[in-house]
Amino acid sequence: MRQWLRPRTGLARHGSVPKIIFEANRPERTKEATVEGGGELVDVADEVLAQVPFSCRSATCGTCICRVIEGADLLEEPNEDEAELLGLMGSGGDHRLCCQARFRDAPGVIRLKALDTGGPQAAVGDD
Ligand code: FES
Image (tube, rainbow, N blue to C red; front, side, top):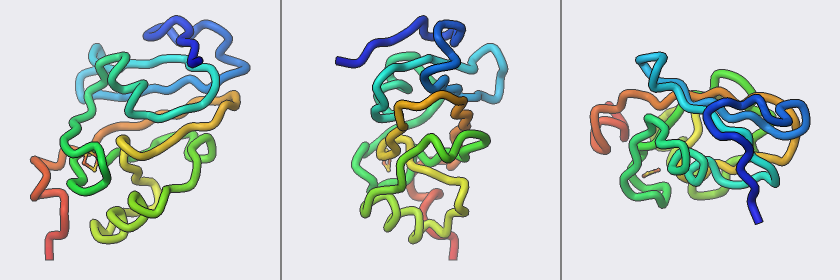
Protein backbone atom coordinates (compact mmCIF):
# COMPACT_ATOMS: atom_id res chain seq x y z
CA MET A 1 0.00 0.00 0.00
CA ARG A 2 1.28 3.41 -0.97
CA GLN A 3 2.07 5.76 1.85
CA TRP A 4 1.89 9.48 1.23
CA LEU A 5 4.25 11.49 3.32
CA ARG A 6 3.31 15.05 3.92
CA PRO A 7 2.24 16.03 0.41
CA ARG A 8 2.98 19.63 -0.55
CA THR A 9 5.80 20.06 1.96
CA GLY A 10 8.26 17.43 0.84
CA LEU A 11 10.02 17.67 4.16
CA ALA A 12 9.26 14.22 5.49
CA ARG A 13 11.93 11.62 4.88
CA HIS A 14 13.06 13.40 1.75
CA GLY A 15 16.42 11.68 2.00
CA SER A 16 15.08 8.15 1.58
CA VAL A 17 12.20 8.38 -0.92
CA PRO A 18 11.60 10.46 -4.02
CA LYS A 19 10.26 13.95 -3.74
CA ILE A 20 8.15 14.75 -6.79
CA ILE A 21 7.70 18.38 -7.78
CA PHE A 22 5.19 19.46 -10.42
CA GLU A 23 6.15 22.97 -11.43
CA ALA A 24 3.57 25.46 -12.65
CA ASN A 25 3.79 28.79 -14.43
CA ARG A 26 2.75 30.47 -11.23
CA PRO A 27 5.03 29.39 -8.37
CA GLU A 28 2.20 29.27 -5.86
CA ARG A 29 0.62 26.53 -7.96
CA THR A 30 3.69 24.31 -7.86
CA LYS A 31 2.81 21.07 -6.08
CA GLU A 32 5.01 18.49 -4.49
CA ALA A 33 4.79 15.23 -2.63
CA THR A 34 7.06 12.68 -1.08
CA VAL A 35 5.89 9.14 -1.79
CA GLU A 36 7.05 5.75 -0.60
CA GLY A 37 7.09 2.63 -2.70
CA GLY A 38 7.40 3.93 -6.27
CA GLY A 39 4.36 4.21 -8.49
CA GLU A 40 2.72 6.18 -11.23
CA LEU A 41 3.14 9.91 -11.71
CA VAL A 42 -0.51 10.25 -12.65
CA ASP A 43 -1.58 9.10 -9.20
CA VAL A 44 0.66 11.66 -7.51
CA ALA A 45 -0.46 14.42 -9.87
CA ASP A 46 -4.08 13.63 -9.07
CA GLU A 47 -3.41 13.47 -5.35
CA VAL A 48 -1.75 16.88 -5.14
CA LEU A 49 -3.91 18.50 -7.86
CA ALA A 50 -0.86 19.24 -9.98
CA GLN A 51 -1.10 21.57 -12.97
CA VAL A 52 -0.87 18.71 -15.46
CA PRO A 53 -3.66 18.35 -18.03
CA PHE A 54 -4.91 14.84 -18.72
CA SER A 55 -7.32 13.55 -21.30
CA CYS A 56 -7.06 9.92 -22.45
CA ARG A 57 -4.75 8.66 -19.70
CA SER A 58 -3.74 5.87 -22.08
CA ALA A 59 -0.83 7.21 -24.17
CA THR A 60 -2.90 8.23 -27.16
CA CYS A 61 -3.47 12.01 -26.98
CA GLY A 62 -0.25 13.57 -25.68
CA THR A 63 -2.06 16.05 -23.48
CA CYS A 64 -0.06 15.14 -20.38
CA ILE A 65 3.39 15.55 -21.89
CA CYS A 66 5.87 16.96 -19.39
CA ARG A 67 9.46 18.05 -19.50
CA VAL A 68 11.57 16.37 -16.84
CA ILE A 69 13.77 19.10 -15.43
CA GLU A 70 15.50 16.98 -12.81
CA GLY A 71 15.56 13.36 -11.70
CA ALA A 72 14.97 11.51 -14.97
CA ASP A 73 17.00 8.63 -13.55
CA LEU A 74 14.33 8.16 -10.89
CA LEU A 75 11.79 7.34 -13.59
CA GLU A 76 11.46 3.90 -15.11
CA GLU A 77 12.06 3.56 -18.84
CA PRO A 78 9.02 4.47 -20.98
CA ASN A 79 6.72 1.56 -21.69
CA GLU A 80 6.02 0.62 -25.31
CA ASP A 81 2.94 2.83 -25.67
CA GLU A 82 4.65 5.86 -24.14
CA ALA A 83 7.77 5.41 -26.24
CA GLU A 84 5.68 5.09 -29.40
CA LEU A 85 3.69 8.27 -28.78
CA LEU A 86 6.73 10.27 -27.72
CA GLY A 87 8.38 9.16 -30.95
CA LEU A 88 5.36 10.22 -33.01
CA MET A 89 5.40 13.58 -31.25
CA GLY A 90 9.08 14.04 -32.01
CA SER A 91 9.70 14.64 -28.35
CA GLY A 92 13.12 15.09 -26.89
CA GLY A 93 14.65 12.71 -24.40
CA ASP A 94 13.61 14.89 -21.50
CA HIS A 95 9.90 14.53 -22.23
CA ARG A 96 7.59 12.00 -20.61
CA LEU A 97 3.90 11.28 -20.56
CA CYS A 98 2.69 11.89 -17.06
CA CYS A 99 -0.13 9.36 -17.49
CA GLN A 100 2.36 6.57 -18.22
CA ALA A 101 5.61 7.33 -16.38
CA ARG A 102 6.42 5.36 -13.27
CA PHE A 103 8.88 6.44 -10.61
CA ARG A 104 11.25 4.30 -8.62
CA ASP A 105 11.38 3.90 -4.86
CA ALA A 106 14.68 5.70 -4.41
CA PRO A 107 15.89 8.90 -2.83
CA GLY A 108 16.12 12.05 -4.89
CA VAL A 109 14.08 14.75 -6.56
CA ILE A 110 11.93 14.46 -9.66
CA ARG A 111 11.07 17.90 -10.99
CA LEU A 112 8.80 18.22 -14.00
CA LYS A 113 6.56 20.67 -15.75
CA ALA A 114 3.68 20.12 -18.12
CA LEU A 115 4.16 21.55 -21.58
CA ASP A 116 1.59 24.02 -22.75
CA THR A 117 0.28 21.96 -25.63
CA GLY A 118 -2.83 23.96 -26.40
CA GLY A 119 -4.85 20.75 -26.43
CA PRO A 120 -4.48 17.22 -27.74
CA GLN A 121 -4.35 18.00 -31.45
CA ALA A 122 -1.67 20.67 -31.05
CA ALA A 123 0.55 18.20 -29.24
CA VAL A 124 0.72 15.60 -31.98
CA GLY A 125 2.93 16.36 -34.95
CA ASP A 126 3.31 19.78 -36.47
CA ASP A 127 4.49 18.73 -39.87
S1 FES B 1 -3.43 11.87 -21.02
FE1 FES B 1 -3.38 11.28 -23.10
S2 FES B 1 -1.33 10.66 -23.40
FE2 FES B 1 -1.43 11.08 -21.26
